[in-house]
Image (cartoon, rainbow, N blue to C red; front, side, top):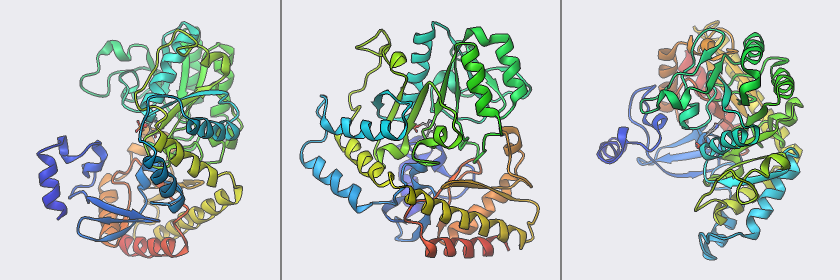
Length: 423
Ligand SMILES: *Cc1c(COP(=O)(O)O)cnc(C)c1O
């Protein structure tokens, strides 16, 4: 059935999919078409049930089809699915966000993380009157022309377009530094600091596999941005409400000027948000001259799904539980590697409810190190688990997303399957 559907889909969508990584390009084989999900499980078109670690790329944190979320979405839908006017629901979600992330004094909802990052860049340029942006190799901020720049090697690389169709002009003002490279950051600020509108970073990188910030890295970005009057923008689309209720900024104690959010804050419906200091947000239309808009922004179904999700995450014990389950999985995987013929060839990076099993001897600290991994070994491991009822993100450069629905049984089943696949 999956093969039939894939053939049909290929006649309709490029690669048969509506977002590239879903096509299994990095691992080969036929993508499984999902027809249903509940808790930690997804069912494919053949009725095969698997434990899911894609979790809608991190948008799902309570587990699939959480009854509380489904209930509020159902009720909201019966009251109308979109109005194009302000609603009480958007206030309720925004208040939850601001309570958890106090640096987000004012915010605006979008329909995706891409729009949030795009708007944050435009806002930083509007506020500073400057054009240059510093980003980091291996950090993903959505499919925005200016941010789709390949990671050049070397210390300070002017961004080159990383996709066909992006003009050199679009990335001309994008500087790229290696993640965690403090020397490169200092050099770039020495040279371009007074032309920089913003430094944009995933404070915990989760789009090159999970790569943690080195000690002092985020602190240095804060210090240099302030010294040069550039804005520090944290892209917390994954880390917001995932690595702590207040995101990476709470966990690491480094406070940005602007924050991008998405994924978890929509509870599985399409939402993004950007926000930050009130004086900066005053630049956004209609208060200020920076235009930004969206027909479905603040969509009532998405707002109630987000608020119901965040409501469950205000309890710190929830995060503790998520973290304990993930730590158990990470430790078990590291033990399984050690006990297998692959000892010394793979490693596990983890933080909160994120983890990546890298096919590198040590967890990487940069994109270049992550790219040195054995992609073929990953593909074999991926299919070994898929055949044993475990669905991993189909790329070596992704984080696995653990949810509250991943209990002891699911973790044990995953470890058993991983042990067999590794053997
Ligand atoms: C997923 C992601 C985005 C883009 O969000 P979309 O909703 O897919 O547009 C931006 N930044 C980060 C860090 C992400 O992980």
